[in-house]
Image (cartoon, rainbow, N blue to C red; front, side, top):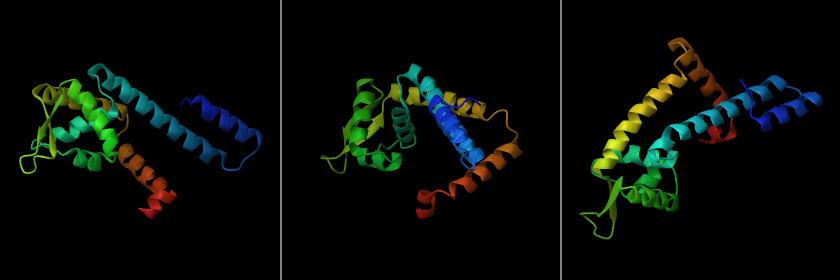
Length: 165
């Protein structure tokens, strides 16, 4: 696996300085490089549909909530700020994928719904995205996937943030 340039530079320097645990450092950089590749590939998959990861997540959440969602609920479910949600909704509304309605119970509040075009885009992109994810791990056996999941869980337990959660 090819490391990102910044990680190759750091690994080369660590090697020159004979830093212990070089294998662990390399493994960390491989993991980070893989995550970056996946993020980049995801962006390439979504771009033809005029979507970013954030916009995709909003579509996904709205598709799962036919009754609509308040912007606050979208922010909470997506783990992003209300300001970020407002920006995402503005773009989705401009592209006619969502519509904002006054809440029936509280006319001051908004409910966000997918438009017909939004529902179709969501359906198309979800299907493509699912196939893309399956393809990423397609050359692993079920046993290898289970093993990889267990190893990732084991490593995550060593992180301070994970211990606090």
